Image 1 (cartoon, helix red, strand yellow):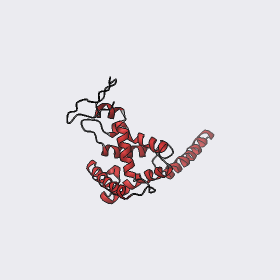
Image 2: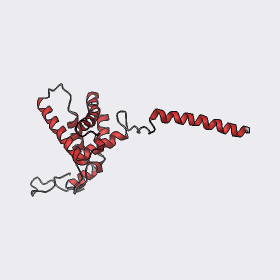
Image 3: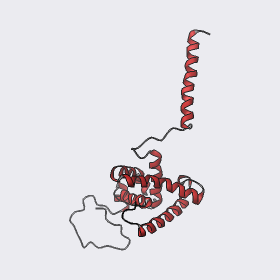
Image 4: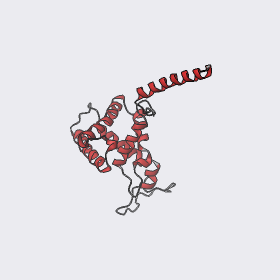
Length: 188
């Protein structure tokens, strides 16, 4: 063996040791990229699915088309109090926990029908909580998720232009505009 072969083999052994340790520590899958201080890309995908279950795509786009998960993580990070941030982040784990109890699998592994059933139960839970909630008690996590989904979707481009009636420059104000049953609400 010459010196060049020996150096390349030692480099291979040392490199394999470093890479092997990294795989051992990370569990052979890369860590999700951070979006901000509180959330990562997996959290955004999770919140997109929660939002899509609340506002699914029909003849109009659903919440996922508006990338509602990204909207939620920005709003929670930038606008919520630290206490509400903790409730929201813990609430994401609570959704998974409730899904595990009800269906034996995590929320992201369930079918759309199971997700709807689970979130309907959580909505009933948050409504009951709101009736007895004292002002000093924290908000319910599902209520925050639902409110952010609605706010984010109907203020997004697909929500305002495809789910609502939209005229880019509406003209004069007409407070007596005729409304027919079934018409979409106005976005502008």
